[in-house]
Structures are given as C-alpha cells and as structure tokens.
Image 1: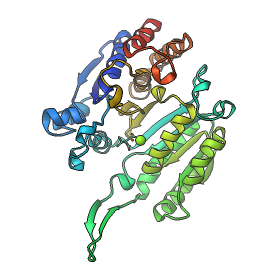
Image 2 (image 1 turned 135 degrees about the horizontal axis):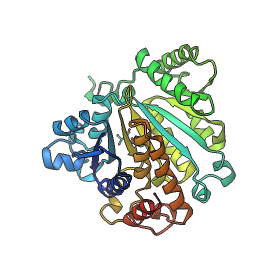
Image 3 (image 1 turned 90 degrees about the vertical axis):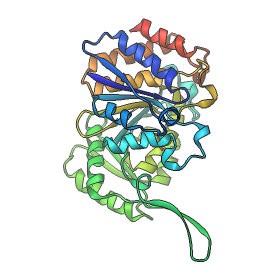
Length: 347
Ligand code: IPM
Ligand code: MG
C-alpha cells in the first residue's frame, strides 16, 4: 500500500502532517508514504507546479493524499505555471473524473450554519461533480477581434461517454444512499447541457430503483439554501459542481471539516480537504486539520477497501468535536497540532 502525500502550499503542509500522524498511528502493515512537490512550492523548486517526478510518484501509488495549492505570489505567472495547474493536471493526467463532495451538519455544530438551524439540520447530501471536462479543459484564449476589441473565450463541451461515466458514478452513489439523484444542468440555454440531460436519462434505464430528477443550476443554487433537505445525490458538470459544492459547504458552515474524493475508474483516487491553501493563516499552526484527516479516512475506504479503519478515524474526529476540540474556523481556539493530538488520542 503506497500513498503519495502532496502537501502543497499555504496551510497544506501543516494539515497534511496531522493526517499523516493519524495514518501512522493506525499502524497499518505495509503502508508506505511517499512525498512529492506540487503547487507554488514545486514551481519555486523545479520551475513547474506539477513536475514530472511528482506525476511519476502519483502513478506508482495506490492513492494520493493532497493538501492544498494556491499562492498569491504566483498570480502573475502564465496560466500553465500557476499552482492550480497541479491539481487540474493530476485530475486530467490520472483520469480522476468523479469528485465526491459530501455535506452534512456535524452533530453539535448546528450553530455554524449560515442558514436557519432548522433548515441546515436537514442537510445530508452528496455532490458528484465531473472533473475532467467542461470549460475547465476546453480550448480557451484571449484574442483580438478584427475591430480591435479583446475577447476572452472558453469552450464548453461534454462528449456522451464523459457524461455517461459520471452519470453512472452518480447513480451508483445514489444506490448506496437514499436512491434519489438530481441532475443539475442549464439545458434551457446550453446545448452541452441538453446532451448531458439526454444521456443522463438514457443511463437511468440501468438504475430503475433510483428516482431521477433534473434541475437548472440557477434553481439548484436557490433550492440549496431554501430547502436543502430535498437533495440526496446531486450529479453535475465541472463548473456548476465547483460553485454548488462551495455553496453547500457554507450551508453546513464548517469548511474546515469537509473532505473530498476524486476517483478514477477502479480504486485509484486523490483525497483532499475542500478548503484551499488559506495563505493568511499559513505557518501559524492555526489551521484546522480535520478536513484533511477525514480525507485520509475517505482514502482508506475508497482506495484501500479499509472500511473499519476509515470508520475509526471518523469516530475519533467526531469524539474530538463532541469533547469541544474546535478549531478557529468552528469558533474554538484549538490549534493544528492540538487537534491532531486530540484525534490521535481518541483513535
Ligand atoms: C476546487 C477548486 C479548484 C477547482 C481550483 C483550485 C482549480 O476550486 O477543487 O473546487 O476549480 O476545481
Ligand atoms: Mg472550488
């Protein structure tokens, strides 16, 4: 079992360190951790945010534990050299097409929601976001029109096989949960979305037990704050999923607790907290490592088939929260190391 650990920028190294401590504490036989450079720190060391050596480490591993990338000092670099290209490149190069972003309110943390408490308490949803296509990876550029005006453009497209495999990921996820799938698109305006909707309906024939519905993305954004309890699994494209998953995280109020998995065909996956590199608090020992620790739990479950160990980590985090160990993002005062200690003790 080889896990690649890519800590990255900002608070990435601090939070990843605590997740690694938790993994090591489990004493899993044959577990090997291999570190690699990604993001702005990789650019400074190697001249590229995703060096070939890092890709090689990723390809030789069973799963990746990822911290965060992003660094304001790189904002003026050409796009292909910016830190974000590390995560985008890993997703594309490794075929990590299915992004699972669960959101639910943690017991005892209901007060953190930006919604009314009785609304937030109903949230238990999973966003399945496509990660390999859409405007993210289409042709793009800034060109000058014949009349001299500059024009930015990004090509949005989805091929039917790309929609089919993410639709199946959505239906499969729904089968393990409440068996309700809501496909989010913008089929009233976009041809890409019309094909998306047609293909999702085709795939639904393979899943007669799952109740399928469709929603335009603007309405979905509204429903997420109006009546989020209606959702079980949401399946959507790359751009809409990026936006809706940030929104869902604030509906539950604790971005420092939300983990995510990015899965390829088979068991390979990359696991990362959904928060970013938070440069404002980097290096201060203030960041909450729980989302990264919970990402490590998802890694054990999805890529290594170790359900019992994953549940042990999740229970230890839940116990620490119940005992009042809260990071600054949760209105508490526990620091990065202290939270790591608390989870390790409770394992
Ligand atoms: C995310 C992030 C990334 C994305 C950025 C860092 C490129 O916002 O994982 O949601 O847009 O996918
Ligand atoms: Mg995002």
